[in-house]
Amino acid sequence: MSDRYLGFANSNLGRRLVDAFGLPSPAPLERWQAGRLRPVEGALVLGGGPLANQVEAIAARLTDELYSFAGTDLQAPAWVAGLGPKLKAVVFDASHLSDSDQLSQLREFFQPLVRSLAPSAHVVILGRPPEALDAPLASVAQRALEGFSRSLGKELRNGATAQLLYVAEDAHDQLEGALRFFLSPKSAFISGQVLRLQACASQVQDWTRPLAGRRALVTGAARGIGAAIAETLARDGAEVVLLDVPQAQQDLDALAGRLGGRALALDICANDAAAKLLEGLPEGIDIVVHNAGITRDKTLANMTPEYWDAVMAVNLKAPQVLTQALFDAGALGADARITLLASVSGIAGNRGQANYAASKAGLIGLAQAWAPTLAERGGSINAVAPGFIETHMTAAMPMALREAGRRLSSLGQGGQPQDVAEAVAWLSQPGSGAVNGQALRVCGQALMGA
Image (tube, rainbow, N blue to C red; front, side, top):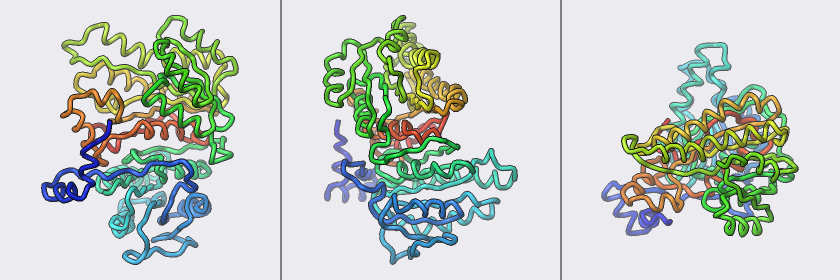
């Protein structure tokens, strides 16, 4: 469903009325298009501590236009406020900030930049995991970056986003993959997020097809977000196996035929689901995306056992059972990537969705619980938590709730299925084992939740 207000607010008349009445003014977001050559098409500016030098070493693979600002020992030409070009991407290394007095460098660096950002610009701040630091004052300073980065994300305009990446000392070689995602339109609907990068032995060999040679399973793949995930994984080179209920066989077959993949009609809640899944994956699987999910909304006072049990069975129990079966059977690749489709409702809760929110919070817990076990084999498991995404389900919502869902975020609009799919595709890359046991929100920095 299209967002008519978004189109109106960006028309000539709409802009005047929006400004006059102080209404929300969401900007059209730039999203990844086929044929794009660089993650950043425009000026990238670097600054801050020593990790900026690490980024400069790979910057030629990120952009054709590089500048430095307030950096140490950077070779790129200096960007001058008021004279330099509009900035499409910014990377600031704050990992060297070791006490609260040094946090003033954040203001000194970003204040001249925020008015010089191009539409749909992307800002990434780098830090060190506070829990890994021995010096208490340094840990405090690094923890402060979270409040700053999230506030910055809420102040940026014209579709710009801001993220914080805590980079472990042994994870420098995984910066490129993360920056290729967060500095590009692939992360258009992600802002205000905090992730930790850990050591990871796997590396992407071909950035044009980062999933080449990998087999991927997507549940709930017949339409909507699941179909978008399957399409994006196939675009990135994966061989896809598409799973959905037998009633969706026609749509499933059509999508599988278009993507050159394989359809697997299966009720994931059936008693023999695990056995049938293993039978359908004789060669094993490298990427698993647990996307299948349902809603049965009622306030708790009116919640029937049938509504509660159905949501728990599909959303939470099935991913647990199927993941365990794949692991026990040795069907998961040695460096498997598993993504669980959670929800911001599982983080913040939502009225009338106690069952749904509990199931989605459980998936985040599942990622945290399984992470150490998978890491021992080079694997990873993470949750992606979408916010308001333009799908058939949200199109059926009452208009007032639908508009509230769209506007109550820093980006002031709903996301697209592609936005969720891009996040899943990134987490499915070999090098994204650097992210493990974490939840990535794809919500435009929704005001609900952390």
